[in-house]
Amino acid sequence: MDYSYITERRAAAELGRADALYDLGLLYSTGQGVGLDFIEAHKWFNLAAMRGVHRAQVDRADLARDMSAPEIAEAQRQAREWMRQH
Image 1 (cartoon, helix red, strand yellow):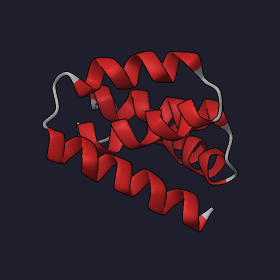
Image 2 (cartoon, helix red, strand yellow):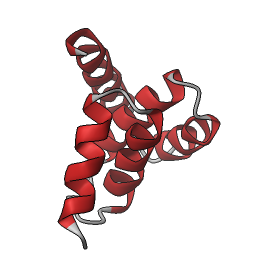
Image 3 (cartoon, rainbow, N blue to C red):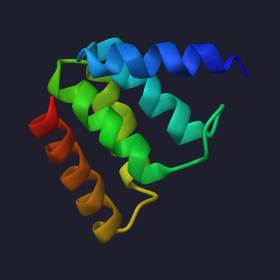
Image 4 (cartoon, helix red, strand yellow):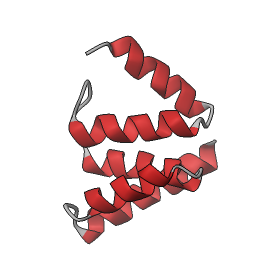
């Protein structure tokens, strides 16, 4: 895995770029270059969906089927916190 790609995606996400938010969701949902983390993936998909990325809505819904209600609530809490900070 090219870790510079992950670093670049994180930097772009910090700027609010919807494509980078979505890409981080993909990375965390598959564990490519990062630890597999459905809560983190759901958070990034949620943020991308709020910026109009339709595919993020679909992927977030698919992911949510494999998550518990408390996990989804935590992902949503983290997304709200990220929004407050950015």
